[in-house]
Length: 138
Image (cartoon, rainbow, N blue to C red):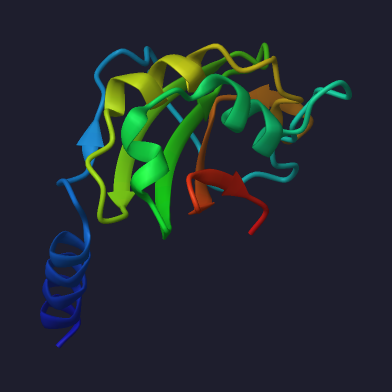
């Protein structure tokens, strides 16, 4: 039963996606966590994450999105640097995953995740909502 639910969920995601999710091979890591004692946090006072995305993601197809979502896997290293691990497009527009990857990789350093008070590599799955061609707060 669990296997059937998983298969149906994946099929539903693929049907509602414009593209099949993309896993990038650029991120170097031996080990990553998806849960931690302290999760990573955005570390930039001068610009918020949504503002950052709106400022740097330039894709003409973004303007075609009335409403939709993208899911980005962001690998956050112990030094706070980021690497785009994966991208899922849940909009009806064709977005270029390479543009998203480049912007995620240029993000300001984050406060890293910690496990047992030690900084660790963490995979943060960040859902972004797009409305009328702009990223908005979820």
